[in-house]
Image (cartoon, rainbow, N blue to C red; front, top):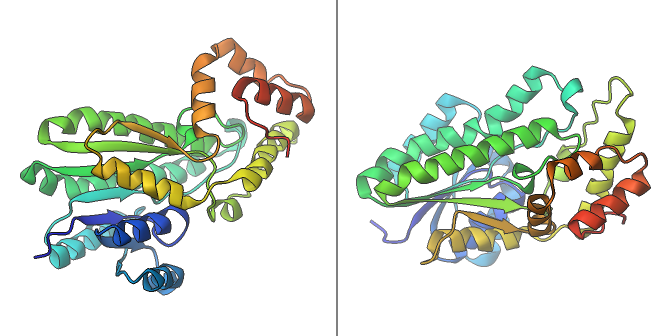
Length: 292
């Protein structure tokens, strides 16, 4: 059996997942890349070929219990063990709380939180038995602050942050490392997939305008997904690990800025009466230009 670390990366078809799968494979990991459809993994396979590395494809849907179970059974049959798991797969979700249905919240939670839980539960018995392993959970900067008009996404990522902290303290006794990766704005297909604007009442037009302003700035400043991939590798391989790793445009500035703010100042951001006032206030608080 190969001595190379066996690493599973979920959601490896695009963006952060694809960059991470390829970077780890290039770094000597045996990578099992999960995708919802093998037929759509062409760019991942092309990337692997151009780097002269191999990536093992596993078709599974992290939102479905049986699919996760069957997919990880296949990985264990082929690899014999799993050393590291990168829970990257996820979906976005726009909407203010008033206009987002409970069903939509549940849909996003089922992927962004429960998907990571399903995959973690599939690998933890083996990791505990060996007394080693790493669970890397890719959350988001919005797991640390309330991104306007992205209520289901924010709620799910906050929940994953909480579950990750829980796992870290529960699994330390077994020699299992947990790492939380908190990307800011990263080049990803999520921009094209996450354009829903459920402005059903018309009351939140300015709120959605503020959200879109952040998207516009994000498309301008977004950093390459390889930056996140390198941080994932560091989190797995470092001799001096930490629990959280902010990365990509805006992450550190937003997290540190929110920590320094009072709750009253945070609420005041919501009272800005024009997009110009919001851009100015956001820049003052976070030292980030979203006025592009």
